[in-house]
Length: 295
Ligand SMILES: Cc1cc2nc3c(=O)[nH]c(=O)nc-3n(C[C@H](O)[C@H](O)[C@H](O)COP(=O)(O)OP(=O)(O)OC[C@H]3O[C@@H](n4cnc5c(N)ncnc54)[C@H](O)[C@@H]3O)c2cc1C
Image (tube, rainbow, N blue to C red; front, side, top):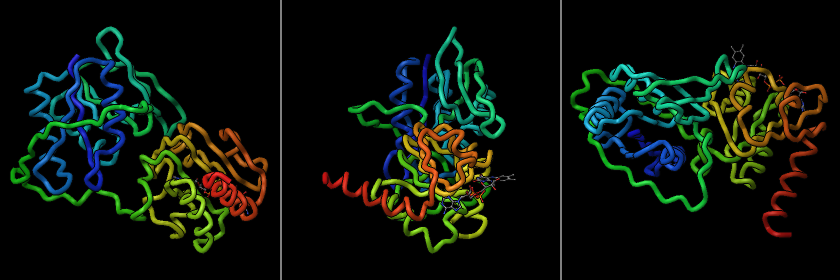
């Protein structure tokens, strides 16, 4: 089977999801990693045309992208232009009898479906779904040029605004510290950020918080926000509404802090702390800092 992987960069660096896909896809067959060049940003039509041309000329059976904002947009366009099967936001994939068997969440994460996707196909893979083995060789994508001048329509820039220069991107973060209405107000976010900084984590939020304007929309996790798959998700003062869970239940370890012992978040948490987050947070951050300093 011939696999074509479309690499993606963020701030000049290849995104981790590209390396995750490249490492795993070797098991499926011959892989080629390409990146679209020639435009200063993501151009939906120009990029899709470039990938379609390469998929045809290379005889690819499968095109893989990250299930990022741009990756999902690109994958859907490429599948439509090629007339190939398409599965978005896959959390796993394997090859069986010449077809792909993929797993993907459906109905806002309530169902995890296993689908048989016949080739040729386009799949977008959720960041963090595939572990990147230590010592994996760096990916060196081949450049394929996009013809942006051929694009008749101008598209809005499709890139999330950075919330903080020093923090990692929410979609690809290995650790996320997320806050809910239990934090009481934006003025208390400094406490949450202190913990995030101590852990090298990204910050997330519930929709109650982003709707209230306490935090920017791009930090929202959930059904109508971002879907995340970190190694560790710390939920502070978040009740665990189904729409929030839809965005984070695939996290590998979930820690919840809530003063209500019956909060729904405890149903999916691996570790739960029943208590006041305003007492827990400073003490926990201090403990993390001491542990990191080797004290
Ligand atoms: C169509 C639709 C889409 C939606 N999409 C999303 C989405 O993408 N993401 C999302 O998050 N929500 C989404 N929602 C909203 C969702 O239903 C909930 O309203 C929201 O997640 C609640 O946010 P919260 O947990 O921060 O607030 P609350 O439900 O108010 O919970 C606050 C929690 O903090 C706890 N708490 C309070 N004080 C403390 C303290 N001192 N110490 C410890 N704990 C404390 C409380 O016990 C409570 O459990 C959506 C809703 C709809 C209808």
